[in-house]
Image (cartoon, rainbow, N blue to C red; front, side, top):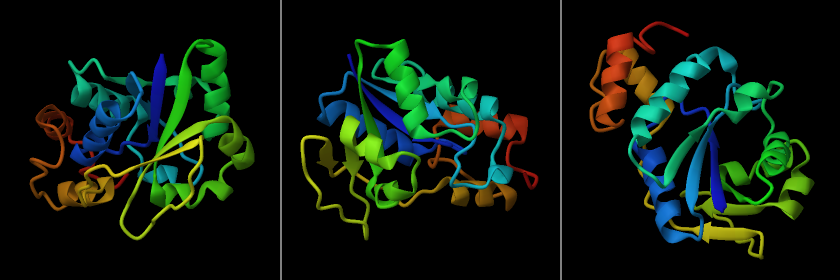
Length: 191
């Protein structure tokens, strides 16, 4: 099975994430897109993160009922901080018949040299790169697939700020996610 791995904090997951995942599932040869919830991204401050199990639950709510999308807590059981190369090695051992691709925005791909063992990643794994404005990737090859997915200017940071200001996040996140965030008072206080 071909799996597209969409790594992220998903703090919280929003419509933009889902549009990209759906576009990858529908317009590439992957059979499923797995949202790999990262408990701690080494390139981001962990102090701004909602508890990883709450974030995992929000992703589950967001993709509920979609057979093309799956959520993974694989990095919860690996050493922290999470490094993509370590996760890929673990997944390849656990699922030897699967082929894994990394789904990544062109903005993040431009920082790939800062990732642990980036040269191993680039030589051993396929990348599905969705173009983001201002971060055009011109590289091509059998390990790189460029994708022009529909993009929205929505960010998890802006959503968290809207919640703190008591503004509506309706239509920015799936309705079930919005209801859970409100019910549980996520992101109301400084994390």
